Length: 149
Image (cartoon, rainbow, N blue to C red):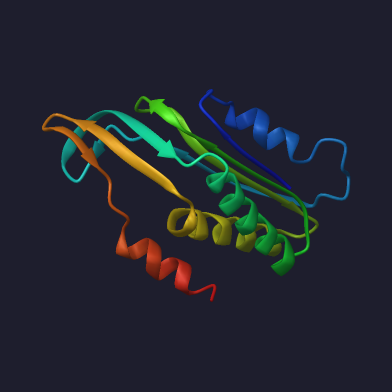
Protein backbone atom coordinates (compact mmCIF):
# COMPACT_ATOMS: atom_id res chain seq x y z
CA UNK A 1 0.00 0.00 0.00
CA UNK A 2 1.16 3.47 -0.79
CA UNK A 3 -0.29 6.83 0.18
CA UNK A 4 1.15 10.05 -1.23
CA UNK A 5 0.15 13.68 -0.84
CA UNK A 6 2.07 16.00 -3.11
CA UNK A 7 2.00 19.35 -4.89
CA UNK A 8 3.72 18.00 -8.01
CA UNK A 9 1.68 16.87 -11.03
CA UNK A 10 1.49 13.15 -11.77
CA UNK A 11 0.88 10.94 -14.80
CA UNK A 12 -2.22 8.78 -14.25
CA UNK A 13 -1.12 6.33 -16.98
CA UNK A 14 2.24 5.75 -15.32
CA UNK A 15 0.54 5.25 -11.95
CA UNK A 16 -1.85 2.74 -13.49
CA UNK A 17 0.93 0.79 -15.21
CA UNK A 18 2.93 0.59 -11.98
CA UNK A 19 0.09 -1.30 -10.29
CA UNK A 20 0.72 -4.51 -12.18
CA UNK A 21 4.40 -4.34 -13.08
CA UNK A 22 6.36 -7.43 -12.11
CA UNK A 23 3.34 -9.11 -10.50
CA UNK A 24 1.80 -11.79 -12.70
CA UNK A 25 -0.69 -12.62 -9.92
CA UNK A 26 -2.64 -9.47 -10.73
CA UNK A 27 -5.83 -10.39 -12.54
CA UNK A 28 -7.55 -7.02 -12.29
CA UNK A 29 -6.63 -3.39 -11.91
CA UNK A 30 -9.29 -0.79 -11.19
CA UNK A 31 -8.50 2.90 -10.94
CA UNK A 32 -10.14 6.25 -10.45
CA UNK A 33 -8.69 9.57 -11.57
CA UNK A 34 -10.36 12.79 -10.48
CA UNK A 35 -9.74 16.01 -12.40
CA UNK A 36 -10.23 19.69 -11.62
CA UNK A 37 -13.30 20.88 -13.53
CA UNK A 38 -13.67 24.32 -15.09
CA UNK A 39 -17.16 24.74 -13.58
CA UNK A 40 -19.00 24.06 -10.33
CA UNK A 41 -22.51 24.99 -9.21
CA UNK A 42 -23.07 26.95 -12.41
CA UNK A 43 -19.94 29.10 -12.12
CA UNK A 44 -16.78 29.06 -14.19
CA UNK A 45 -13.76 27.85 -12.17
CA UNK A 46 -10.34 29.16 -13.19
CA UNK A 47 -8.36 27.28 -10.53
CA UNK A 48 -8.48 25.48 -7.23
CA UNK A 49 -6.30 25.58 -4.15
CA UNK A 50 -6.24 22.47 -1.95
CA UNK A 51 -5.10 22.80 1.63
CA UNK A 52 -4.34 19.93 3.95
CA UNK A 53 -2.93 19.27 7.37
CA UNK A 54 0.47 17.61 6.77
CA UNK A 55 0.84 14.40 8.71
CA UNK A 56 -2.84 14.22 9.62
CA UNK A 57 -3.89 13.89 5.97
CA UNK A 58 -1.45 11.07 5.24
CA UNK A 59 -2.52 9.29 8.42
CA UNK A 60 -6.21 9.54 7.47
CA UNK A 61 -5.52 8.24 3.96
CA UNK A 62 -3.41 5.43 5.42
CA UNK A 63 -6.29 4.37 7.67
CA UNK A 64 -8.64 4.27 4.69
CA UNK A 65 -6.16 2.21 2.65
CA UNK A 66 -5.55 -0.15 5.57
CA UNK A 67 -9.27 -0.71 6.04
CA UNK A 68 -9.68 -1.50 2.34
CA UNK A 69 -6.83 -4.02 2.56
CA UNK A 70 -8.54 -5.66 5.55
CA UNK A 71 -11.88 -5.97 3.71
CA UNK A 72 -10.66 -7.25 0.31
CA UNK A 73 -7.81 -9.48 -0.90
CA UNK A 74 -5.68 -6.81 -2.54
CA UNK A 75 -2.26 -7.18 -4.09
CA UNK A 76 -1.56 -3.47 -4.32
CA UNK A 77 -3.27 -0.20 -3.44
CA UNK A 78 -2.13 3.29 -4.39
CA UNK A 79 -3.66 6.57 -3.22
CA UNK A 80 -2.20 9.79 -4.57
CA UNK A 81 -3.71 13.21 -3.88
CA UNK A 82 -2.48 16.61 -5.00
CA UNK A 83 -2.43 19.74 -2.86
CA UNK A 84 -1.64 23.35 -3.62
CA UNK A 85 -2.69 25.31 -6.70
CA UNK A 86 -4.29 23.29 -9.50
CA UNK A 87 -5.70 24.32 -12.86
CA UNK A 88 -8.78 22.96 -14.66
CA UNK A 89 -7.98 19.74 -16.47
CA UNK A 90 -5.22 18.68 -14.08
CA UNK A 91 -5.51 15.36 -12.24
CA UNK A 92 -6.18 15.87 -8.55
CA UNK A 93 -6.53 12.32 -7.20
CA UNK A 94 -5.57 8.78 -8.23
CA UNK A 95 -6.77 5.62 -6.55
CA UNK A 96 -5.55 2.35 -8.01
CA UNK A 97 -6.28 -1.15 -6.79
CA UNK A 98 -4.78 -4.44 -7.97
CA UNK A 99 -6.23 -7.80 -7.03
CA UNK A 100 -6.40 -11.34 -8.37
CA UNK A 101 -10.09 -10.80 -9.16
CA UNK A 102 -12.10 -7.89 -10.54
CA UNK A 103 -14.88 -7.71 -7.95
CA UNK A 104 -12.47 -7.08 -5.08
CA UNK A 105 -10.67 -4.42 -7.12
CA UNK A 106 -13.90 -2.63 -8.08
CA UNK A 107 -15.31 -2.65 -4.56
CA UNK A 108 -12.08 -1.58 -2.89
CA UNK A 109 -11.57 1.33 -5.29
CA UNK A 110 -15.15 2.48 -4.76
CA UNK A 111 -14.76 2.19 -0.97
CA UNK A 112 -11.52 4.20 -0.93
CA UNK A 113 -13.04 7.01 -2.98
CA UNK A 114 -16.21 7.13 -0.86
CA UNK A 115 -14.18 7.35 2.35
CA UNK A 116 -11.61 9.74 0.87
CA UNK A 117 -14.40 12.18 -0.05
CA UNK A 118 -15.86 12.09 3.46
CA UNK A 119 -13.00 11.35 5.86
CA UNK A 120 -9.81 12.85 4.45
CA UNK A 121 -8.88 16.31 5.75
CA UNK A 122 -8.66 18.40 2.59
CA UNK A 123 -10.07 21.90 2.11
CA UNK A 124 -10.79 23.17 -1.40
CA UNK A 125 -11.02 26.80 -2.42
CA UNK A 126 -12.12 27.54 -5.98
CA UNK A 127 -11.33 30.67 -7.94
CA UNK A 128 -14.55 31.63 -9.71
CA UNK A 129 -15.88 34.51 -11.74
CA UNK A 130 -17.55 35.74 -8.51
CA UNK A 131 -14.32 35.49 -6.52
CA UNK A 132 -12.83 32.76 -4.32
CA UNK A 133 -15.14 30.36 -2.47
CA UNK A 134 -14.69 27.34 -0.24
CA UNK A 135 -16.17 24.07 -1.51
CA UNK A 136 -18.53 22.35 0.90
CA UNK A 137 -18.88 18.58 1.19
CA UNK A 138 -21.85 17.02 -0.57
CA UNK A 139 -24.66 15.10 1.07
CA UNK A 140 -24.47 12.52 -1.74
CA UNK A 141 -20.88 11.69 -0.72
CA UNK A 142 -21.98 11.06 2.87
CA UNK A 143 -24.81 8.80 1.68
CA UNK A 144 -22.42 6.85 -0.56
CA UNK A 145 -19.97 6.28 2.30
CA UNK A 146 -22.71 5.03 4.63
CA UNK A 147 -23.19 1.88 2.56
CA UNK A 148 -19.81 0.59 3.75
CA UNK A 149 -20.66 0.82 7.46
